[in-house]
Structures are given as C-alpha cells and as structure tokens.
Image (tube, rainbow, N blue to C red; front, side):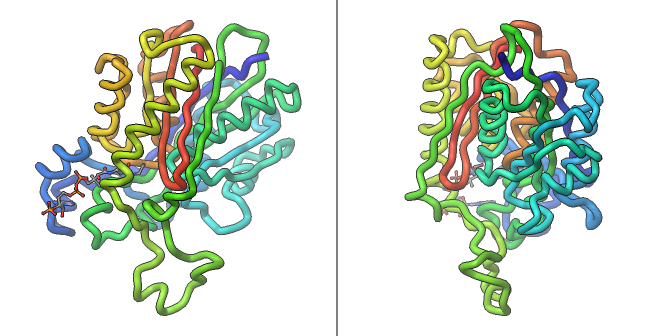
Length: 325
Ligand code: UT7
C-alpha cells in the first residue's frame, strides 16, 4: 500500500507587498533583499483572510483535482504556526468549512517543516491500513506575527496555503520514504515569544513586542543548509537512491541562497530545483505544497518522476520525503 498524492491545491492572498513597498517601511533596499534572499515580493492576507480561509481554498482546489468528496476524508492535518486560535485546531475549522464529517482533524506544529511532518504522519496511517484518504495542508498568515519594524526578518515572510489529497493505493507510485529530525537545543534561534503559557498577553508583552517572530537569521541559515542536506541524503539512501536519481527537488523556500547551497552540495542541477521564493517569500509550512501545486498544474511532473521534498525551520525541526509521481 502506497500513499499517492492524487490532488494538489494552493491559495494565496491577492495583495502583493513588493521590495519597493518594504523600502518605505524599513531601512532596506530592493537590491539588498534580492541579492541576500532572492525574494522580490510576497503575499499579505487582508483583514478578513485567516489561516483557515486560505487553507479551505487550497483544500477545495486539491479535492477538486483529486475528484474526492470531503465526506471521503478520514484524516485532516493542518501544519501551521499561525492557527486562527490557540485552540481548537485550524484543522477542525477546515473540517467544518469543508463538511468533512467523517474525518479526524488536528494541527501539527513543526514550523517550516510542518507539511513534511504531516505528510509523514499520514503516510504511516495509510500504510498500516488505518485510514484510506487524507488531506494535508500547510497554511500560514505569518504577516500577523512578523515584526514590521525588524528589517532583519520582515522581508522574508509571506502568507499562503498549499494542500494535498493523499489516498492509499496498491501502486508503485506514491510516497517512498520519509525522514524527520529535531534539535530543541536551538529552539530560541527562531520563535514567537508570546502569547503562550510562558508569556500570556499583558501590556508588557505588547510593549516588548513579544508577539512577533524573533530570528537569528545568520545562525539559522548555516544550520538550515547542513540539516537539509542531511535530510535529503537520509531519505534518498533509505530508498537506495542518490541525488542523481531526483527529477525535481522541491525545497522549503526560505532563502534563495540556502536553496542554491543545498542544490550545489547535492549536485542537483538548477533546472531540477523548483524555486518560487521570488514571488511568495518564505510561507513556512505552506511553501512546499504551494510549490508542489504549481509544478503539478504547470505539467512539470511526469508519471514516474522522483520528487524530493526537503524542509527546515524553527524547533529546530527538519525532514524530507521522497515521492514517486
Ligand atoms: O524557514 C526557515 C526560517 N528562516 C530562515 O531560513 C532564514 C535564514 N536566514 C536568512 O535568510 C538570512 O540570514 C537573512 C536574509 C535573514 C539575512 O541575511 P544575511 O546575509 O545572513 O545578513 P546578516 O544578518 O549577516 O546581515 C548582514 C548585514 C548587516 O549589516 P552589518 O552588520 O554587516 O553592517 C545587517 O544589519 O546586512 C544588514 N541587514 C540589512 N540591510 C539592508 C540586515 N537586514 C537588512 C535589510 N536591508 N533588510
């Protein structure tokens, strides 16, 4: 039994924030952002768009492509660090929006690696025969937790959602191997200090801007390159494969220089590396499923292709998945 990706979907807000717009907000330049990150613009949610609404749009697109009805879903996982509410899970809000009455629904918190983690979980349930059909979504409205006064981090992030419908089938195609790893000793390199049980909302929390992302970009950068290379090599070797077998490498879109560095280390040629960071920035858990959906809808993915999905982010948490398309 293999977990086949039978439909993909994505959704991003209409509003575009360009580097030139950012020049008016913080002391930065289009040239600096472009050369340091590869980002030209990112999408920003409007006041009436939430993680659940973006997730719902992406999910509907994926279900439509798959020809799967919401009632057929056995499990819904939303990977997010920007849920609508601390609880209940955004997955239950999505379940309600879809009318997926037969599913269990829960969120996964693994920051930028959330989609990879969620895909890995679903794969295990499908392989054991516990469930047959699942919906995995990465969705974020990071613009609400970005410190728009912090030029070191605000330029990176964007909003969006990507979704995949996964079905258990007797097939040679589908998810081949998964790999997940975490290192909590670096939890404070990238985090949101509040609100939470440690720092519940208070005037001090607001005054000290603790509700916004804190990031030591440089440290994260170095660890990301090493960890994503490790994840890629582990998941490929689990299937007795090497990077030379990869037809399309879809890395988490964190920084163009990170993507290029990993591509180089793995010796995957540029034309096999999917990049859309220029248009969306870093959308955390949504970046891989948005890229996957774009590649799928462009007709880039051919039956039999080997896809390598690879992510890294806060936690630290990283991981990779190989998929035979
Ligand atoms: O999804 C996973 C999560 N996050 C990541 O993967 C982020 C990984 N890190 C990065 O992408 C990069 O570290 C950044 C893009 C955040 C920063 O790039 P960098 O090449 O690491 O720059 P830096 O922090 O070393 O800063 C270099 C210089 C500094 O000036 P001095 O000290 O050399 O004079 C910064 O103050 O660039 C300055 N700087 C800026 N200048 C113009 C920092 N941010 C900006 C800015 N515009 N926005």
